[in-house]
Image 1 (cartoon, rainbow, N blue to C red):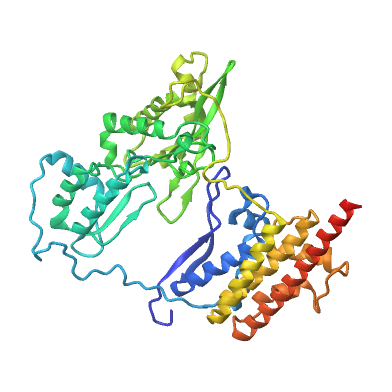
Image 2: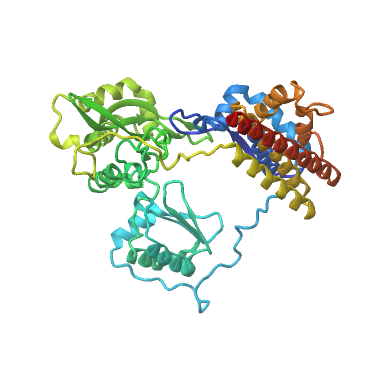
Length: 514
């Protein structure tokens, strides 16, 4: 740009998994790095104002953009730019630079240690260790089955990290850890200490490193067990297809239901919990999905539903898929390219005999890890919250926002104060609307509905209308003068709606007595 190298990002928004997975859409082919944080803040502000508020299942950016369109959404984002506290936020890019990183207390090069099982060490080295761009350093993946780790084991891992790696470890998308800046000479010693605490498992981020949500172990939304089948499938890979631990092009991901907490929609081979009716009984089942994942060119793919089979047949389905891929894929053909070439129906026909319930076995009425017969139940899950939306609660929240706005004013945090004053308007208006049994699913709708129900009826009067009063928030720079004026307007409004509510309660009481 003007002869200078400018760092930046390709910006994608509004992707999501869940029961209706959707790939993110491109907002900018190139976004300068110092525009990244303001862009994200503007998105949050727009979604806060226009996003779904009643139906929590629709409270996602992807649904808002599906409703108003990407161009309109980006127009609203651009409209917020004036009101942002910071128009440009530099991204510090030198935080990952380690000029000299040697944890040896004596300042010597790490002594090369002999590893008892050379075969296992080499397998770990070839599947879990990656050379960094910083010369002489390596990143190491730590595979954690099901992502489950006791606190005492984490403390032991922390001690190992202190010796051999950078001063942190990152949690990875596949429920493992990533250690950084490990010197080459430290790798044998690191492996040996990881092995002592059972964290030197080979196959990090491979087909044998299966991602799974907790499923029916702890989540009431889980339809069938995801952790039990994940462990069984890992055994199949380890015992029968060990060579595939070196293959990073196939990932297996499992969810206990269609909501995709285990990311099954983004797997080359995915499963999600379901159920099947077999006569008078219900059988725990798996929906098989194929062809998802990262395309390798910055694009992604959502997996296709293929067939539903009893859960206990999951290992047999995996064997069928891998054997067929091994027999018929052409040289260097990835699993997804093979899936595309053969087509969905080919795999449906390949697996359909696993869905035949005419020969159902007694054990198949039980889910993985359970001794009793399967009973499908769905309740409130880990990813769903209980909502409380009472008039008194909303007024309390409005008062808290107003107090925060005043505190921010005193601390000269003018942008923060302005947004907190805005929230006071929204909570106060919503509370009074709810007192009339009127609800709105967006903040923009709350303001418009208040205008209709209380301003147009003459119960409240504003010089230029309630809409224009509230939405001054994105028409002004976050200056001291505007923050003070906006705070006073919010305070006056809250006092007015509280008085109105007190009058409503008094009239209700008099009506009951009469």
